[in-house]
Image (cartoon, rainbow, N blue to C red):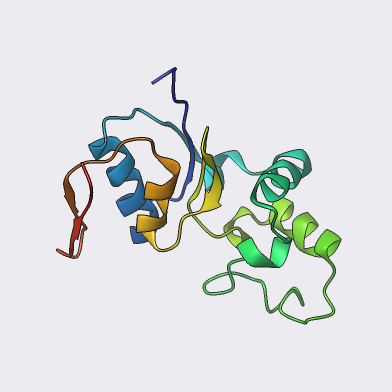
Length: 137
């Protein structure tokens, strides 16, 4: 919806990302979905998202299933600049989903975190694993 634009940085292989996207759609929105593993990231994009979230790069870095450890990024001495540069080179290092709406920008883990970014919600939602999330409506 153009009056409430939503940008959804999505990894379709991730259950959390799929559930969050389904919640957004169940609420009646048609978000702009960006498969960031295909499109990649720019430094400017990541810097902008981090600023909007008031977060450090380490807060959105995914370690599991990524080259984070082999690149030395799990070392507490790894700089923010090194982490962002690695995220640009290896998009899988960015945790997902990151959602941008007029209400804010957030890494939506768990998937229910996306609800705080919406101005309306479905009455309930059933996740892929069968868990029912009761919402407000």
